[in-house]
Image (tube, rainbow, N blue to C red; front, top):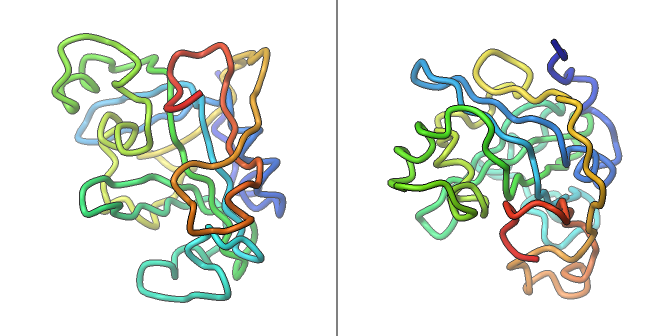
Length: 198
């Protein structure tokens, strides 16, 4: 049985490499006594230095962003538009504030639970495509902010999933980031239907 990715994996200083490398890995949660999991099919990288789209740009250190400055391997969960909890993984070493947003997964385990959490009667792309849908399906809330992603509640492992083609493109919904909005830091599995936008 494959081991969960280690904390040292997430301490890699290259957030763009990690965002791409996570495509095809399996994300699992054990929340409220149930296990749900899926293959990561879409991510976005955010760099603490020199990336206007990053919450920690120019060293911004607030109650919300302080978790980003911790050592990699923990969750950064924040509320977007007052509605959606978005799940990010803090990467790099302490003080660097890099993070990867998980934008979509392909459900593999606990699909009935995911459907119940999302109020969905059937399995389709919308169940776990889009970062707000991912967190709701997996049961992740802001109570999981700062939690380890290498522990017993949330973990990621290499499940041996082969992704034939990974698309690199610009991130979504960050027009405020000027030229940084054009950085090709969003990655998705070309052959998966579980992707927010192709």
